[in-house]
Amino acid sequence: MSRRIVLLPGDGVGPEVTAAARLVLEEAARRHDVALAFEEHPFGGAAIDAAGDPFPDETRAACLQAEAVFLGAVGGPKWDGAPRRPEAGLLALREALGVFANLRPMRVLPGMETLGPLKPEIARGADILIVRELTGGAYFGRREEGRARARDEIVYAREEVERVARVAFEAARGRRGRVASVDKANVLATSRLWRAAASELHEREYPDVALEHVLVDAMAMKLVLAPASFDVILTENMFGDILSDEASVIAGSIGLSPSASLGGAVGLYEPIHGSAPDIAGQDKANPAGAILSAAMLARFSLGTEHMARDIEQAVEEAIASGARTADLGGTLGCRAFTQAVLERLG
Ligand code: ATP
Ligand code: MG
Image 1 (cartoon, rainbow, N blue to C red):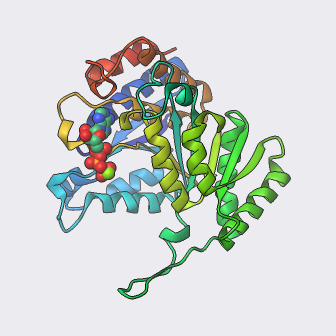
Image 2: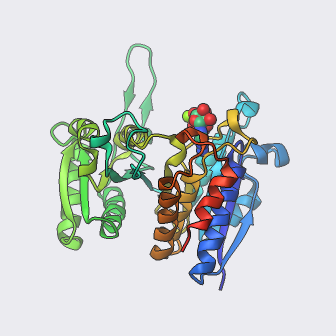
């Protein structure tokens, strides 16, 4: 039976990088004898233009029935100040899919050590997966606005910690078997719950994984001093927001970074970059982040680890052999780079 994948190309460079990811997934699936059925649906600004709604009902129904949803990017100057914003569709999509764990891998690829802001000898070999809690904590707590006094509340239930910690431990088993759990347990009550819940789950079900606890301020330092010393980093919502941006710049270009949002029945996959309106429609976008998001789809939604590895290796080999888009200092367009990846599959 074919496995259904819904593509939401979205806006700006979204359609270009989505087309690239689809070509690579199709070819990888063919080589691994996996039958995939793709459907494209309107989403974001494109859907506002077509249907007056960034997340139309038909798109919602298709997403809920799929095995995985792949998103290009949404938004752009055209819809800034519009009554319905494309980004509202994205929040509604995440909510509809119930994705409470956001996974952002950051790898410094061989030969790319000089691209980011760190010294090459420090950046070399960095290969981190950040698992960020996405639906709790300060961003979802009660809020009191005020000019003289304001208040934001952080609440975590044990169950919310356990379910995202489980995602981190499972991911670690498929990687180098190590989790660094980030908190501020010397100050915050929610962090002490976080630490206890993660530790107890670890003892009970994941004794084979190595777990350490790192205070968030120390982690902010260690990420730039020794990024290669971490495997999986598990963190609550706000700390994860901050640390994942810090980590993503280490790789060098925003065009390289993929993401997955998991936890519901259907996974959501998207490159971390935005719609990049300045280069849209010009065949200039780096599709690597999208293609690597497709690899995550293969790993987490299809359960085809070999296929995921093949895709990642093809991207790595293409870049190592000199295939580079403009953001990496090269001359290839989006399509030519995708071709270079396709040639190295399998
Ligand atoms: P958003 O608010 O959706 O995050 P943004 O405008 O903040 O969007 P991006 O759309 O990601 O951010 O663009 C930021 C810069 O990075 C732009 O100059 C853009 O051209 C560049 N950029 C983004 N994605 C890519 C890509 N895939 N390849 C090359 N350059 C990119
Ligand atoms: Mg932005």
